[in-house]
Length: 135
Image (cartoon, rainbow, N blue to C red; front, side, top):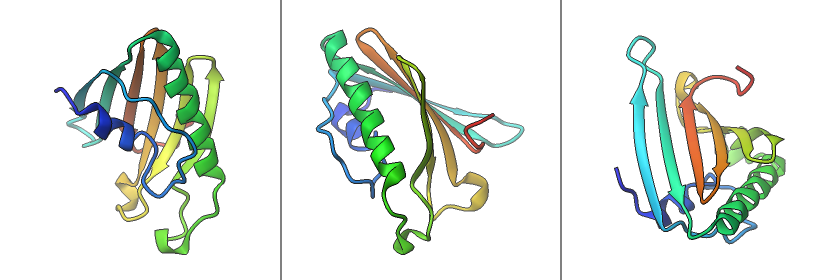
């Protein structure tokens, strides 16, 4: 499914997080959703295609900086006292992992484990519902 690249960039860092970077907009964005029938868990994968590898790298690095800043921002009582992003890590130069939390969702579906991978001119974002980020 083709997505509006501007919409994808707008949601690359959770709403409610202070945006410190002006993330570049990809030329194309393709999305696929998944559902695990036995558990009901959901997943979303988005492939972003940028004009060149340098722009993809800038998106990847700036998004990592924004996620780290979001994880460090004070927790708001208005958001139910939950951090919007936690457990941000970059295990290598091309991978970012984090856990995004929806403070208004039921506990069983409130967290999404996200992995972003830099792949040349592309950044692939995968979010899987549930989990802790360590599994």
